Image 1 (cartoon, rainbow, N blue to C red):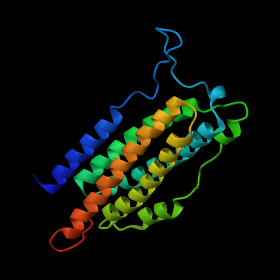
Image 2 (cartoon, one colour):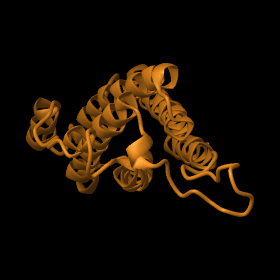
Image 3 (tube, helix red, strand yellow):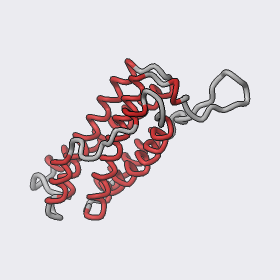
Image 4 (cartoon, rainbow, N blue to C red):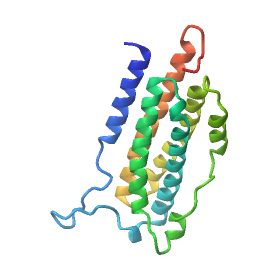
Length: 200
């Protein structure tokens, strides 16, 4: 199996497995037959609100990263991964925004403007990268970015209060870790290939 085809299969399998986990909006057990679509925003602890708010900003930046590079990517497997990340994180972003409070003590944190927070240098690298290097730059930028998301989610699993938010954090940690492994594995294959590193 060609390397690019094999990697594309791994990408699809990994992300489908991550997305096939429990729904981000599970039913409660309080009243049989009644589905609670989301944790009550007013009942979320401060740590849950901070996590969701931080992850909203992080996912917004992820979408910026993949959308900035997607039309310039040369490698089919990398395009597959970027597209899957875009769909997954857009869905998670919608979920998290719906869970965050719009009034009350947590509203300031939930409504905090994340524009320009971190990764500006990464975006500049992508913008400046010539077409021959954009695949390599995206792999490096995205691996660092998703590794940070996995670390945040892993910490939330240990300290979060709302079980639905913790479940989302578990799935974020698993999916981002899988993405980092794929990106790192691809870099290793490129480095070991005859002729050394190349951009696509």
